[in-house]
Amino acid sequence: MKKPLKIVLAVLATLVIGGVAGYSTAVAAYESMYTRGTLRNGQWATNLAIGSSEASIYTRANVALHGLLALAKSEAVYYQCTGDDKGESLRSNCDYRIEGRGLDTRWWSLTLYGQDDFLIPNEQNRYSFNTNTVKLNTDGTFVIYLSRLPREGNWLPSAEKDQEVSLTLRLYNPGQSVYDNPGGIELPRIIREGCK
Amino acid sequence: MRKWILWTALATVIFAVNVHIAFVSYIPYKAMDIAMNVRFKDLPRNTMVPSPPTTEQSRKVVRPSPEILYSICIYDVTRKPLLFTYHLPDGYWSASFYADNTDNFFVINDRQTKSKTVDILLVGRETPMPAAGNAIVVRALSDKGLALIRVIVPDEKSLPGLVESQKLTTCKQVD
Image (cartoon, rainbow over all chains, first blue to last red; front, side):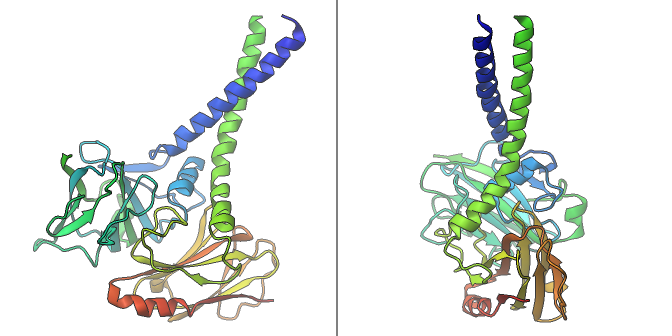
């Protein structure tokens, strides 16, 4: 092969293969919720570097795309959940029971989002439960039902269209136990009851 | 021939690493740019604008919180500082400032303030520090960015009063 042709081929290979490899590994890295600094707590994941200058470039990119304008940990701690307690993806065609109890925080909310990261339309205009709206059992625990069909008690309507869904648990002005042990505090469990 | 392949492979890896880092680093800036200049392009700059209550129709920023009433100010403190005058409602309130790389470089909430009215003076990166009076002075991490107010709506009854209180907060350029 002639030398100029070799050089052209080498440059082309570098640009195409390098470009594709760089781009695809970048997407894979920031789309993974478990980027550097992310903590697991059961099905939930959190990253206390969100919003701060200490966040890694991957955390920052992930938050920019899936949680833009998140608050720094001094104000709020966010937990994300995309799977049930068996590790299966949360899906709108399945029914779930979310069991929890009061959290060490000034105020909390649990919000359901569709695959597009926006609120899911429903006739009840109900997208979440929080400190003020959740009905507690006498022992201070709660159960939230995530399903398409209405349920007694705390019913969070799921999407009519088949899709993966996700939950965000927001803790505003959390207590010290959250900062001390974000991966170990008791968080709601998401139990799948069945799928249609 | 072998040497040629090795050099090409090495160049490809170096190029891939650079593309990887450049792309990941660029996303936060691009996301903020889209938020400020595409999604909120109709909002006047350096003006606090109350947003309507969050619903399924709220699609400007991903993962909005349905219990929070937001007000937004797209700031530009390149030339002059901005004075924010906040009127706090009862209950949870916070004011937060975001740089063009998504960093939340300052936040304050109702429990950290001494009164129901708070002044914050946002100063550009290179701007000389002006006389601030009683205002809390915040040096912006970037000259252009976004300021948010969050107010928790505890129940529907409280909504009209909170919507009214949203309108009281102002931000204006000062010399």
